[in-house]
Structures are given as structure tokens and as C-alpha cells.
Length: 610
Image (tube, rainbow, N blue to C red; front, side, top):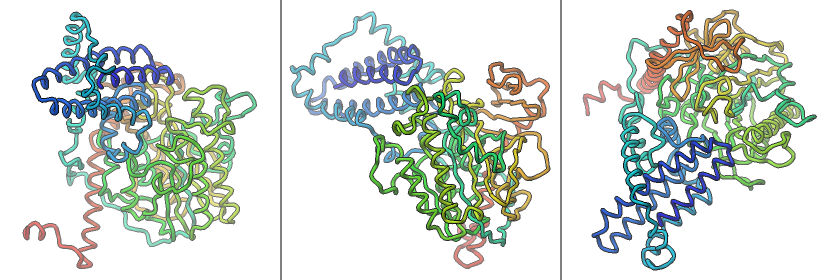
């Protein structure tokens, strides 16, 4: 069944490339090179099992085709989402975030068709003279076979030396990537121990009890450059998010706000902790034992809950929140309602989920801490029907803009629910994008987590607190780490000076720069005079002047920006250790409390007894 799998998968990749407007020549080159490599690997496999019994051949052939089908499924999904084959960066994200059970739950009908074809291998072998034998008789000319063999060996060597691994067949590429340890990570997959020199004290828990409700709305993949641009919509349809625009005039509006990362786990980590994310490839924010303090612990709410249409079991720092008391987390697996649309595989219906959340808002005991994390603007930008079609086309950007309008309507419903219950004046509403979204504004920039351009990092942020905050625009640079201290200042809840790396937007103190860490390994530092510096230690340093070059078309050197580069270098080399020290300190505080209560044995004593 190799040939049916091979032919169908290649046709599917071509179809995907056309439907997603991917660079077709790149995909065709990928198909030709990897396809030749797969044929060569099959010939090697046939040679190795040729002298075995028919039962053994059937067994090995079935397992081989199943593995091949699984590799094809992964490549199909990755090419569809990112416009490129699976590489080390994407593998690192997936391995850190997605359990196998979750991956299986996301299989589509086409995926199961591949699996079914592989399972038919014994039947195809039994009827060797049937139509299936036609595929096995297809033979490439000897010249082609020699060229394929030479190219495959060369590209494999290139891959192992750190070259373009995407051109190596998935049946080799995936196992090698899976077995390659993540840089900066121990074999256990847990962060390395921190050094004592960077240890920082955690703030002492405030005794102040806030009687104010908090509504935290995180807008998935929502970028500043799209939300108010009426050029993206049909004539007369208006801007994508008119209600959000209305709120900006009634809120503390952070007009130059940037995500602390181009991926959700790191961005959400910053929003809740007031700290920058780790400056390393591994996802510190997804550590199951993470105990770094989050903003909800300052509030002492009577009830706290989080609702999202998507999965919270993967690619989401659920453990961080659970370990800080936010245990009522409701995602795709806990939302028990009948779908009113197709595509139920990667997220629940946004409208129905928002209604579920509103029901919780209307019944929650005060004061509550509530969180809603949307999904509609996230790839693949599901089609919710004609009611939300404010664009003319059906490409990625069109579907994305349509779903921004849908999301805007849900925001209006949230505020309306608070008003209906009569608690709007006693609620602080935080609305912020976790990161933005890219649509090929730069070559290869297909989605949010591949690069750190403005289309990836610039996001909307506001705090709506009627009667508590005088509406105004903050034009200073702000980042996700600033949200937590700003919220606490609005609520008049004290915190220590070393509690956060961010700065309250209400503070009169000025700062020189803010940081962001990209999944691709880039440290971004925004400095004075709209200078954006991007730095990868040992590789490159470049700057963009955002006033004269807002689209980032002209990368300049870093000469004249030595202080900003030095700050970026310090962040790159110390931030991960700083967070590890915070984690160690938090664990030590917990252990000390348990020892004081007589519920635990000190580490030193435990080591002696063992």
C-alpha cells in the first residue's frame, strides 16, 4: 500500500499548497526531493525483508506503512498551517505542548484514510496479482534512481550538519528530531537548576482583600494592525472591531503595546505573572511544577474560573494557574454542548462558548476573577457563516478578519452581561491580544510564531474600569509584563518592588526599553525613538526605525545602539536563570510552610534518610 499512500499524499500536498496560496515552487521541490528519498527508502526496506517469510513480510510491511502514514499526516498538517515542512523549531513546540492523545483527537477524515490504507497492507499482499500489484511494478529509470540516491544521501548529510532539514523525508526527519535533545534542556525535560547568584525574593502575600471583580479577556492571535483597518473589509462594513474601538475611548488604552512573545504559552505566562518569558527554546511556561506567583493570588476572589473554546491540556500554561489556585479551567473537553457548525476538531464554537462564559459571569459569586481566551482568530480561521462575512474573499486574511468581527461581538456581549447584572461599575475589564498574526507581510511569515516582526508582536491592550480609571491614551511602550502591576495599581493592592519585571502603566517612571522573545530564538528590544533591535547571540544584530520604516523593509546594523544591544544580550543570557531562581524560591517557600506545619521533612533530612 506504499504507492497509494505516496500518490495520494503528494496530491494532497499540492492541493494544500494551492488552497493556502503557499509558494507552490517550494512545495513542488519539497515533494520531488522527499518523494525520491521515500522511494529509495522503500527499496532498501524491500531488500532487507526479501528473504523473510510471507508472514514476517506482511508484519513488517504493515508496521512500515503505518509509520509512513503517521509521518505523512504530520507533514500534511504542518505544511497546511505553516507553509513549510516540520523542522526543529516546530518540532520543539509540538513536543513540548501536545500529548499523543491530543494529537490523535485532532485527526481528520483524511488522516484516518491514510491509517486505513496502511492497515490494508496484508490484504494487498495476499492478492499480489490484483490491482494493487500495478503500483509495485512501477519502476523509475536507473538514471533517476541513481540521481535520487545521490541527492538523498547529500541532503541527509546536509540535514545532520544543521542544514535544510525540511528536504529530508519525514520518515527520517521526524525520528531524528524527536530524539534530538532540546538545547538548554536536561534529559528529564525539566529546566536546569538555577544559580544562587540570580535568586530573587518573591513578594509577600498582601493581606488586602479586593472586593472588585476582574474580567480578563485574552484575544487569541489579534493584531493591532488589523482590528481598526476598514480597508480590509467590504465597503460600508466598517472596521473589523468597532466595539473594541469604542472601548478604547472609555478606557486606559495602551496604544503602543507589544506581546512579550510570538507564541501563546509564553505570552499568557507574562500576562499572569508580570514577568518576561524564558529566553530559551524550551517552554519553561509549560512546566507542570511551575509555582511562580500569578496576579489572581493578590485578589483573594470568592470564585475564579477560566473558559476557552480550545484545548487546555496542551500548549497552555494550565499548571501555572492551577498551582496558583485557578483550578476551574474549562476548555474543549469540558464544554458539553452540540456544535452548530463543522470543524469541531480543534476548538468549540466561539459563540456558544462565549454564551457559556456569560452564564458563568451572571451567576458567579462576587468578587470573582474570570478569564476568557478566544480562538476564532487563530488558524485555520473557521467559517462561521454569512452573518460574519465582512470581506470579499475566502483566503486566510479574509477569514481572519471575518472572525475578528465575530470576536468583537462577543466582547460586546460580555460588557452587556456585566451591565445587565448591575456589576459593571464594580468590575475591572482587561482586554489584550496574546500575540498578533502574520499573513506573508515578510517572506515565509505565514503565522504568528515564525518571526518577530510587527505583524507578529503588536497587539491591542486596554483596561476598562468605569469610575476607577480616567480614560486616556498611554503612548509609552508597554508589554504584557506591565498588565499585572497596572491592574493591581488600579485596585489599590500593594506589591513589592521586585514582584514584577513589568512596570505599571500608571507609574510616572520612564524606562529605556521593553523585550520580547520569539520562538525562532530572536531577542527583540524596543527602545527610545522607535528603534527596534533584534538580536540572536552569536548570529546577528539588526535594527529597524519604525517611524521611517514601519513595514520593516530596511534592516540596519546596530552601530550607535550599543546600550540597547547590551540590554538585549543581558536579557538573553540571564532571563532563563532568573525565572528558574524564582521557581526555586517559590518551591522553597512552599516547603518551609509545610515544614512549619509539620507536614514535610526538610530536604537535607530527607537526603540523609534515603
